[in-house]
Image (cartoon, rainbow, N blue to C red; front, top):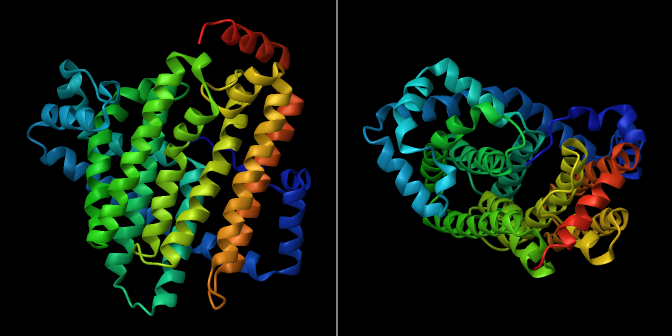
Amino acid sequence: MSGKDESIFSKEALMGTQAGKDIMKQGLLRSKGYKQFNQYKEKTEQEFGAFAKRFVMSLHAAINADSSPASTMQKFAEEVSASELVPEAGSISDIKARLSSPNVLQDRVARILNSNFVKMTFPVFNALYDGASEYFGDSPSQEKRDAVIDGHIIAIDLSEPMDRIVDRDEDLEYLEDYKFMNPYILGIARHKISQGGDAVLKAFEEGFKDARLGQYIDVKLKIKPASISDENMNDCYKKYRAVMGTAGRNMALNRRPLGDIFHLGMAKAGEGVGCGNEIEDAIKNGAVKVPSWPLYYALNTGDVRRGFELTMQKSELYLQEAEMAVEMLPENFQLKPFLEFLFLTVRHYNQYWYNELQKRAPFADFQKKIQAVAAVEK
């Protein structure tokens, strides 16, 4: 996913959106949601470096211990049904030698962790895990807590190199390294998540399968963009809702009612962020993303501006469903204000990039490209 520009939460940026003004108001009033959110944000900012170090060490050990990396690549390609996500056989030895250097590997990990989406997800999972532990009366070990949270953050982080490989819109000189890292990242995530128990691992595997389907449809629509429809866009968005929803479910160790409620909230928030990603990507890349909701709506209205307006409406529908999850929470659940504030930050993110679109987007160029897609036979 996109989202590297932290200036979107500067005072100036917050003043530019209605959601941002609401965030500032809560900050001034020191609302419960603001205080809870800030507490976890500050705490996890201090812990993120330790998480990154654990990730690099695990990845380095897995790569160095693998006596048959070619076989590992082949198995991963078969599992995800995408040979383009692993390197060519002839380059595997050279890539392994390069990534065997801890400094080089640390650089590559830092690049894929340099995402606001990953960094903002870290405090959210910590909060959800703690809230569920309190609700169920658990006293889990720190080791288990770290394993479950780390595993899902690493699984979500896998989407970063995979997206960059498919989209080819950034880090082009590092894509072959990312391809080599993919199977090991997935293996580490699985190992850590399994420490949450069989039900947790089962939920992850089901979610990962759905996410792979979403990624597969994404690739197919890139090849034939004129075939886009509301049905296949909903399927494509599995890459957002399956990953985030499953992670939410597993922060409650896949137990009802919180598992289902967290799943709904995180899945719909993930889809809401997806809409913002598509708007942000259009600005940064100078083109309407293929596939995306703006493309779908523009093709069917004939108006690219209208396509982005409708995408914002779509994002609001997703966020309204996410907010329904908050209403489902038990009355005594302590972190309701945290989640309400979280969804407000997502709304600001989307509004910010929509406002930037109005100021910066080359709409005439967008319209020409939409017309070119529309001229192609479905």
